[in-house]
Length: 346
Image (tube, rainbow, N blue to C red; front, side, top):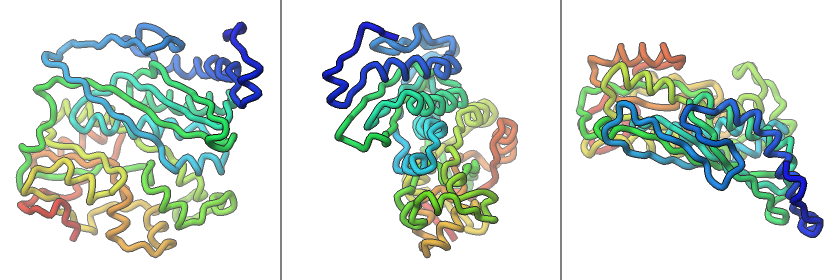
């Protein structure tokens, strides 16, 4: 901790720089869990240093991704539980990066808060570190900014940024997809980090409602909603080693109808039988409670499908086996057909 840096005048204006130093000291134990062989120096410098391992990579291409957690953070505020939203933040970035076949290398976070409470900031970072461990990438730096007057003292926002690497010759090529290819679903853990503005409206979210237990969920509403986003890095890396993958989609905001077409070539659509979608109970509860039309549900939420993967029909069984061996659950979701509709749910 820097004992020579303090300003009473700045503190009286709402910014306590010494709280920032304490937060850094508290979070170091969590950051240390994420260190990989590419990390050159610890946190605290002006930039995070990382040496890329180029073994087996002939034409390196860097892939970047950035995202936040969205209004799911409101659930964390109400439950006063801050050690899981960091996992969501990492997941939203690294799950995008792997869609082109890249392996995440490092991550940085950005926390803006009304008041820097070191223990709370450290708790948030503990989740970020856990997400990095799950993704196999290093937390090489970040920023905590105290913004008095911009937001309430007890609130914060969280965003992140990640960089991955892929050999240019191994970047996934969606144009190789054709009618008859199989689309595989990798299951989600719940709502993940999308659609929470609608979720909060549906349940009129407050502390009392979040504490309500639902038999169909097997838990309270708050616990179900705060379940962290799955991180699929290890499963996808294993899958890429096992079979030829043609495309990957991360099912985030916009649900099936927005995200699946992003990885399809022109003239090809994904045809999915509604009865084949293994919808999680939380989505049935949202639809029922909010009287939300089914199409809106599929155009807002992941519905139990965190990622979709397209492979040749002959590789479907091997692909599912590889995903399951890596700890995720997967099943055949549908197939590709000649069409310009993007997604056909029938």
